[in-house]
Image 1 (cartoon, helix red, strand yellow):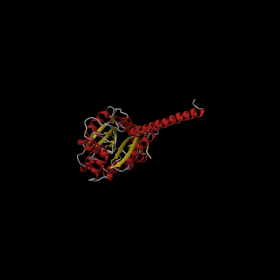
Image 2 (image 1 turned 45 degrees about the vertical axis):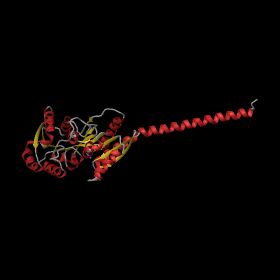
Image 3 (image 1 turned 180 degrees about the vertical axis):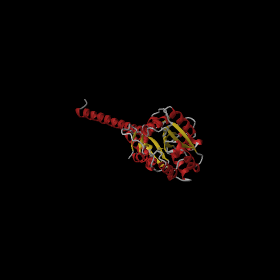
Length: 325
């Protein structure tokens, strides 16, 4: 006969063996779970053209959005820290870093990740880029967030912010912005506004062209144009415009602070968040193409300048038009 003590010992052994087996299973399950979590966390490289405030704000937006929606491990690279031969070192680090996605902030960073042969087969996403097709040299729209506000929308904001304006001079180089001029001319005409072409092919021509046309325009519209735009030209042009009592329309905070009457000003942190959301969608397998900016811009009216020029001030502005700081 089997004693009671032997039965109890056998039962204890079976229980101990079962607990051991369960513990082993839990260890393997936890290891598998940890491996899956590690596998699901995608490494993402964020390349920034240079360390300036708008780009830094966009990076803050990207980081904040990923913090709220885990699924990516971010590493940020500022291109202005890499010069000459160091660019090759950066290229090698990016190629060997097992990054699942490259995000660019600014045109120089976008051009780098789209043209570097070591990153040719990698997923890419650009942000804070104006006219991305021209920057990247692609016929079809690549994946990213552009800074282009539709021309129709810009004209509507100009009409609402500066009521009574009927002749708007557009300062531009036809080599770079003839398409913009034609589009603006067509869309403005339907709203009873004439776009007066102020064509230049070099910076030296700007004073003469402006001198010949001050009497032909009610406002001067400055757009991103590589021939026309520089800080010194902006300050000179706005100063001359104020002297001639002609309001200037600009496209960022610098124009506003330099004396532009109306300026389109982006919220770069919100643009960064929009970019991060697109990145998460791309990582989940969704298709990606060009997207215009979210309603992440404001139209600032410069009351001080309007009073100086004797322009009638509208009391109740509707968003995105608002009185600037």
